[in-house]
Every structure is written in C-alpha cells, then in structure tokens.
Length: 356
Image (tube, rainbow, N blue to C red; front, side, top):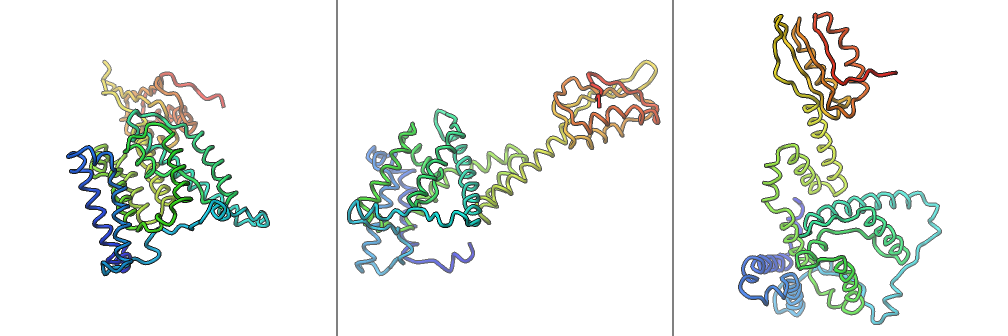
C-alpha cells in the first residue's frame, strides 16, 4: 500500500475521482429524483464516462494519458473462427509433473474457500434469505473448472461482486448468473475492441463502491456491539486479508475464531448454584456441568473443585451432560479420593462410571 503512492497516474486518478462522484450522487441523490436514473444504472454510466475520457486522452483533447496496463486488455477476434482459435488444449506431456498437482491443489483450496465465503455472503444479501446448497455449488464449480481448463480458460469461482450486483439490480433467480455469463461471452466475442477502451480506474471505482456497500461502517459497529468473541475474529480476518492475501487472512481469522471458541468453552463448562448450609453447619456447593464438556474444560472444573473449603459437601451434577471427555470423567471418578483429605463429602448426579 505504501508503494502505491509512487505509482499514481494523474489521468487514472482523474477518471477514478469522477467515477466515484458519479456513483455516490447516483445512489444518494439522482435515483430519488427521477425514475430514469433507476433504470439507467450508475456503473454503466461510469464505464461510458471512462471510455469517453480515455478517448479524449488519446485524441489529445485533454493533456493526460493512460498506460497500456491501465485499460482493459482483451484479445480482439475479427470473426468466430479467430475467437475459437484463441482456445488452447491441455499439454498432457506435463501430466507427470508434480508441480502441476501442487498448483492445482492450491487453486482448488483457494477457489473453494472463496466460493464458500461468497455463498454465505450472498445468502445474507438475498432478500428472501434462501440457503444455497454448498455441495451442489462446489460440484458445479469443479465441473466448470474441468471444462474451462480443457479450452485454456481461467479457474472459475464465485465472486461476491457479481452476486451483489445481480441482487442490487433486482435479480431473484439463478437465471441472472447464467445470463451474466452469456452477456460476458457475447461481449468478448462481439465488442472486445470497445471493452479495451474501458479504463481500469472506472472499474476500480465500481469495486470500491460495491466493497463499501458490503462493508459499511455500520457493519463494523454492529460486529463490535456483539462482543469481542465476534468482533475479534472479524477484524482480524479483515486486517489480515488487507495486509497479506485471501487465504492467509482466512487462516488467521480462523485461528482467532478457534481461540475465542475454546475460551468460551473454557468459561462455560459449568455453573455454580448458590451454596447452602445443612443443619449440621456443612456448606453445600452444587456444580452443574454443561451439555458438552471437553478436555479443555478440565482445568476450570479442577479450579472450582480445588476451591471447595474443608468439611464441605459438593454435588457434581451431570444431568445436562450429553458428552463428557474421558479426562474429565476420570477426574470426577477419582475426585472423592482426593476430597477425603479435606473431609469433603462428594455426591454425583447422573454420573456414569466408566467401564474401562
């Protein structure tokens, strides 16, 4: 990010700034004034304005310029035969090259993770809150990637920008995704020359606005209000993705999430009922274990039992338990022997002695 300041181009910066202004005005003001602005979408206008400015740069009307790598670059075919000629078949002579399988595995993992994340985000954006069948999505992606690879195509994966754009502009069924692909194919075949006039700065502005809508400040505020167990993995993932890459960011966020899950499990393995006193003056401490008690909870339960005072009575209630780790079962079984040293009476409820 720091090096990006050294790569600023006045022409691209001008187009990006104008594009941002158009998109902001389109969403906040213009669409509310006339229905025409609802029919004619802001991103289309931004692309057309970008093409116009690129043309003005090329003709010298404006004293700016864009480098070749700052505009869309697609191969231009004069006819369908030339377009089909751009396809390349696999080089099966490399089938024994182990590096091919390594790269393929990494691409499969990254593409699958990105798709699953986008599926979850898309389901949340869906107005009727439908749930996408993830297995079917991954199978379709796998078949699509095999077919794409056979003609030299790029890997296929779901991208939230496309799904978000479809939903924003009124799409309600998967037909929108199919038509999206058809329009892209027809555009690449018929108007590749026109597409090659689109500045990347215009597309960047559109992506920034889409990203802002997906990650508004209100979302960060909402996640913060949910507590650190939700906010910490969220902000760690966002920061790590920005500073590294998607896969590394997800991995870091996952590690933080696992830490808080274990921490939550550690703190909520049991609860203590209010202690009472028997007629003979013996304190009674009632410990109720949670539904799931893992070996991570052994330390916290041990800490509570160690704090039981001498000459007291402790009730270990397993009525709610559905699963108890063997380490904890073994400890509860042996605890009465240790408790005798402090003259503590131990009673268990619904505790099943291990047979092994």
